[in-house]
Image (tube, rainbow over all chains, first blue to last red; front, side):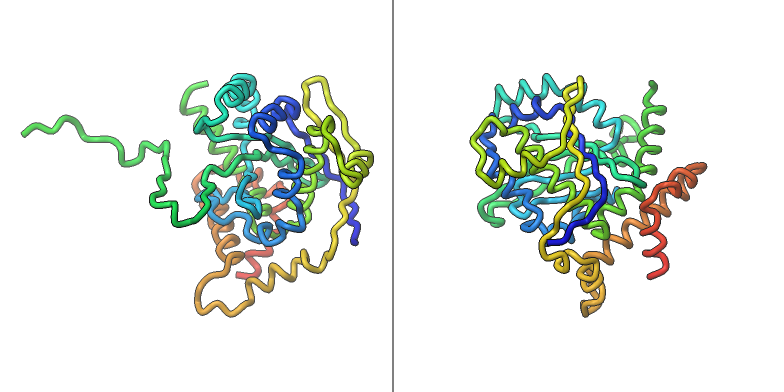
Length: 154
Length: 150
C-alpha cells in the first residue's frame, strides 16, 4: 500500500438533496462503491476523454458503464443549483423520466490547480447487449446549416 | 445579459477549460482521478450513514474529515490517498500505450493528446486576448510535454 500526501478538497453541492435521487432510484451504498471503486476502474482511467467530443472535455465512464463523470462549466453549475429543487422533485415524482439523471455536482480543489467542477450522471445508454442498440442520434443545438434563403416559389 | 454576451462568456469559459480538460483527459493525472473516485465513495458513506454500515465502511467513515456549510454543501478533505499496487497506476503504463506497435493506427493516448493540443491552438488562434488566461493554468505543463513529444 502506497500513501501519497496531497491535500484535495471535494465539495458535493447539496449532497442531501441529491441523496433523494439515490433513494428514488434504489441506488445503495454497495452499488455506488462497486461502480466507483478505484481499483476496478483502473482501465477506465486510461480511457478518460474517449468520446468526449470536440471540446475535449473530461469524460469518465465507470467500469460497469452505469455512471459517468464529466466536467461542467461554472455557469452550468449555477444553473443546476438554481433548478435543483424542481429538478429533484420532478425526478422523485417520475422516476422513469427520460430526463438525464444527474446525481451530483462537485467542485474539486487541489493546491496549485484551478478548481474542477464535475457532474455525476447516469449513463442513459445501458443495454443488456450492444446488439440492442440499432440507432444512435446526437441532438445538437447548433443553427449551422439550418437556415434557408427564403420562400422558394415555383 | 444579451445572447451575444452570453455566447462570448461561454466561449471564454470554454477557452479557460481547455488546458484543464486536456490535463484530465490525457490520463496523465491518474492521481486526481483516483482522488475523485475515492471522494465519491466517501460521500456515499455520508449519504447512507443512516443505513447499516459494514465494519470496513464504518472504519472509513470514522476516518473521514468533512464539514457541511450553511448552504448544504458538504466538503471532504483528503490529505493523502492510499493506493494499492501503485505500479499498476504508474504513468509508465500510459507511456506503454503510446509506444505499443499499432500498425499505423493512433493509440488512445496519442489521439487524446493530439486532439487536446489541437483544440488549444484552435481556441488561441480564434479568440484574441486569452492567451494569458490559458497559459496561467497549471496543467499547461502537460501541453508542453505533448508539444516536445511531437
